[in-house]
Length: 397
Image (cartoon, rainbow, N blue to C red; front, side):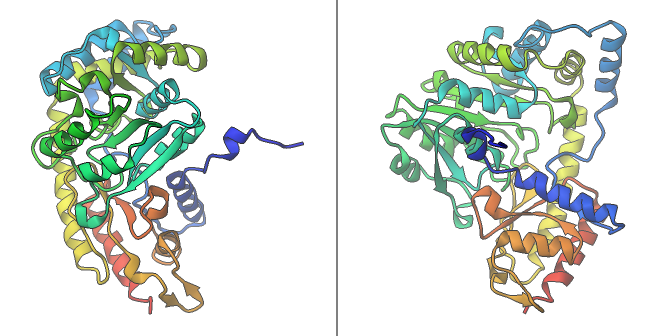
């Protein structure tokens, strides 16, 4: 009797991880695959952060930490929010978790009841709808097209809200599109939300520092809605610390208490050594963040230029993060021998198996006419990958 729970059977496997696995299988067979499917910086964690971790080990930071994180880390996050974002939070409004992914899931599990609706703009990060399903909630997908730069309008938000709406998940800068909401655009959405007091905003700001428009705008910067905003952030993208697994929420205290209760029962506090490394990331020099941002911006300019040179692609220039999300539906219905491209998943698999470039089909992100490429890799890899893609799609007739 191999019966998994209904809860688990409702979930889809992660498409980004599935693509990565297929890519690894080909590599194991000796195929030279360029991997543009993974959403993590290719840089090493900066040395001063690694040194802090080594020191933490030597100083025996090897015991359980408090469930919401060490006070020193929470204080560093409070200072970061004040200095970088102009936002006032108390340490009691901060909870640290095992990555921003857990922070999002904690929040959803803490506020969503069975049948509650959560508005998720598409394209979306693959895990948002699945987390809502895990909480017995109903994902309500609102499509933001490439023509509107993948951002929803206040009119779309208003039309999607019902008496069952409990939350809106907003990711800016966005995974998978790289789109960034301006302060004015956020204000338009905020004015709609003011009319619907039950709706919580889950603001995923993990790509905050990988930004090409000069400044990051946060929904929490509006005083009249701040008590309904949960900021999600962490060290993984800005400091090249994906494997250290430290994320946090900054939120109204009642939500933090709820997430603390939940986390206390199923993971407890995050890794002690990682917390000391994260503290050093927030309190030390920020030069490394800007150096990596500049490298990402250079790569963004490079991949956009090369992608625009590929026939059939429609390309919007990203304003943040490290993803390009071109429209590839021009190739749907085209063939290479017996192989037919029916959708973006087919297209991504074709690029992998024939062109030896790993990407991710847009179906997984709720945008089936596009596909995602991560340019968190070297300039040389980008140039070669785009050469292969251009050569491969030319075979489709």
